[in-house]
Length: 337
Image (cartoon, rainbow, N blue to C red; front, top):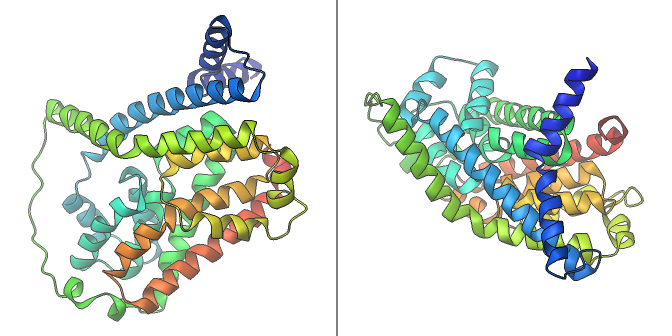
């Protein structure tokens, strides 16, 4: 058992966390005459290490997830969801969200397509909540920084929010609050073309290139903010605003996250720096969930598809769920770290 634990720690620290890379970068900067113990030196080391690490993991994960996703084109996903009913349909929709687009704005066209095809409104909202909040990529990236326990709990709770949120919307019978042009759209039942392995590899490679171009600027911004927090903002400031002494830290984190637009790859380096400075775990995860699920651009896009009452309900359910999760994580942080 001890041997298995040691192997897992090695995988988590060296394969996923790439701590060897941090040491290599630190030695290289020192050899170049830069003192990494200073603010500027530490910021440069943090920036280079996190950009290279997240980019390498990102490209690998997008390739693997896109290959899996090639087996679940929209029409096939719709047919899968159509076979289930009740809470089981919400659960399957939330799980399908883990192998679909990485940000909320990319998820909305699929949400519109599923809704137009006649799937229950609650099922499509479970998908819409899950898709940007939790995915296979976020699981691996969270493991690389926070460890397996926190990563798994984060994904499980994200799926719970998606299932519960979709179920509530379904029970409230909000179908008439979807815009009429979507409800009246006719779905075309087209059999998905069966792809060869070579075609799936090409698709995965194209997804890597396209997603990388879209996501990389947010990685640079996120890592830049993380480097600034890590080396320039006093620890006492972070603890005062987001630490255990501020009972409103979770709410502040959610309010701060909503106007931003990024995916989980851009928020993780910020979360990493905040945790190192003493911010509470639940507060950090609430911030990440708010940014990825309730970003202002995605809300504006969603307003084109649903009416204000349903949009307010969606925002309210997600916000309340994220806040509750934040406080629960804070309460049980000692069990996870």
